[in-house]
Length: 480
Image (cartoon, rainbow, N blue to C red):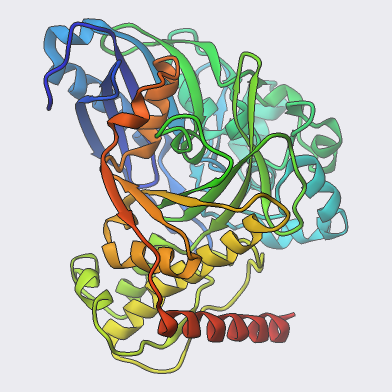
């Protein structure tokens, strides 16, 4: 790791779908130490995605110890810590003992989608209140499912011992000495229970989903005295946020004419707003409440990004798809089209039961290219929506694991007709946390070298996108 000066250090904890990371940054944005602990997910049934709550706690604790060991005496210079977690994942626990009473139901989990259909008549009102579509990806239906199907959760509710809410709240409770029962607005806003205007749980929605405010954590700003981490060096936890929310700040304060794209298991494209805006096909959200500053965004979501490539590798038994995809994306042969509903078709189409399919035929490598291009096409569909009714977007800033494919980044730039900038530092979530922890220093964006992709004329890709749009429209009309 690069040598650092004598100044303060900041610990960023990123609990993601496949790993828990601990990174330490100095006051100039240099990464001083980092460590990663893999975590597992489980798929007991179709549309069920779970994780072990205790494993996630242990992975973070181990990552903290490991990074402190790497730092040695320098660990004493860490002055604050921040935590970012998977949004929309939920868990239930005992508010007295801290024992988990349910698995973590992942953001990808859709087990309660049939139950949720009863609220379709209220979908528009729910969207206007919460900024979210009526979707089983978000927390409310998962919390209700736990109460209805897990006897230990129901018993704890009867005994007034139940705590439930976003994964972030459980981790704050388990990692802090104070056993804080708190939630930040970034994670609260992914539950279908949060009122974007009042910045608190909505009593009408709690009544609608038959959930008790008493079981939910108190909503506080993202920057808040959450408690002290009770492992290794005693550190104040002063910042909590969702992973995609924190990633928006990786390169400084987000600009309203930039689209911020993060591509991992899912892909998320966000644009900063001056105030909450209702959009019929996109999500509205809050990504930061810090003193008097509140940052709102419009967001498009692609559920089947890395998840779609993983699905294809398993479906076609392709070994090392990740290693081979770069070369395949450079081939000239025309791939088929892929209509991508992996993990549910998200923005801007919102068809949770959409059946994924190929249009046309091809070798396995061509199908891999088709799945990769479907991610590009879904991202472009969301960029088209983000452009409407606003000042034009001028730049895409991209981060996340899938951005290491140059040909994928070039296709996004070509189709969008605007430059795409990919910073060297891929750990956008941790870096965004650290920038906020450090007090939003103005010089951090200047320390971020990267690669720029300029849009090129690509008539074949444009033609495939037009055909893909027509095929999607026909499939959605047939399904509807």
